[in-house]
Length: 125
Image 1: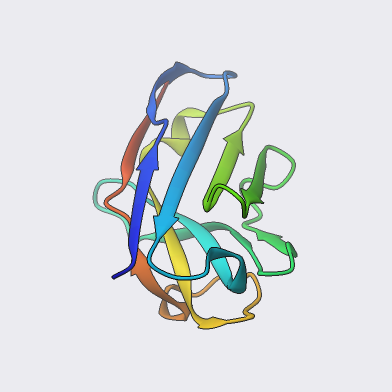
Image 2: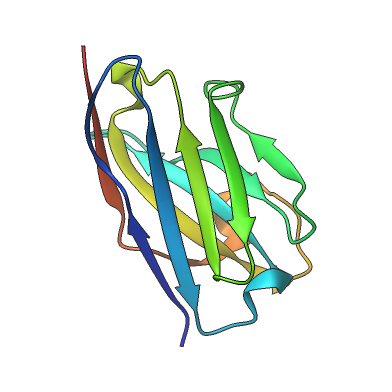
């Protein structure tokens, strides 16, 4: 049974930083791509960034240069470092794990089979 548990969300002022973590269990972590998505009230869930099994990365244009995804396979954890945060970054952030092993950092929700419960990020202006 795959479980993904996010942590690290909170309230931060514009220009500040947060680091989200997502601890995974249930499958051999290093074989799977991991993704971060976010959903603001009244909006669709959108891709933030992804990290392939080989550590290739892919980011949404809105976060490029500000957000960084990394993984620690020994800890079965993926991270999302968020710098220079803006009020429009406020959302519930979800991590997700790819369906197939040896996958790349895809930006489609359909690529990911397992999802965490989400963690709230609020950026005040």
